[in-house]
Image (cartoon, rainbow, N blue to C red; front, side, top):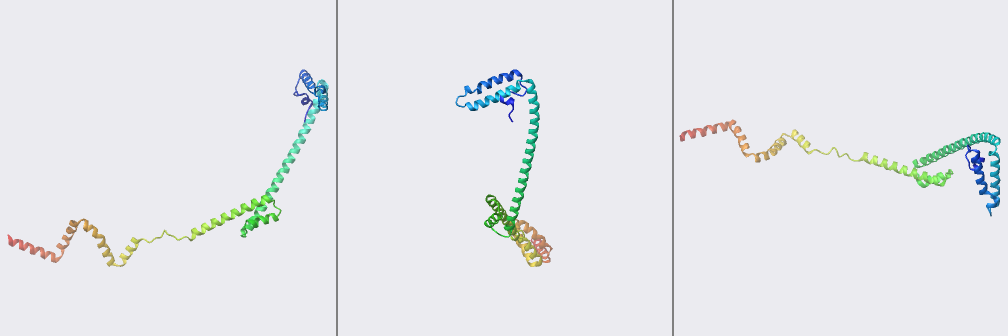
Length: 235
């Protein structure tokens, strides 16, 4: 909203001298004699400059103008605020309606996708509901991708549930121990097999281990006494 001060190019608090200098400068710039070829525009602008100076150069008229202008500015600002508020409310309502329509189209596409329909069917259904082409394509693509991801996740979960359990592999040592407990013969054979490396590694220990066994056997005792008797005869 242009004011008389804007016409002269001065602030609202300009002094009389500042207003006078601004008027002279603007008048010289827009005088018709100085704007050959654009006389009509210059003449209209020059007249506006003269009218503005006539009011602002008079203290009484300037005071009235300032009060009227201030009142007009308050009214204009209030009206502008009301228009802005109405525009904001209309935009908010439009966004809410658009979001509701979008959610409805997405729900519709999800329902058909859950029934096993592909992307092209979803796209056609959305178009049949007067959904904008670009939005229908976007919704159909997104819903189809979501359903594909869900199917992959379900398949992976099912494969994991049906996979064989390899954690319970047979323990050979456990089977051997169980067999040994049920069959004493197998237990003895297993003990003998396990003792072979020990006998090979320590033959002296094996001989020492055998001596007490022979000494405690009755035949071993008699044999020992016989050798003592023969040795006694030699001496």
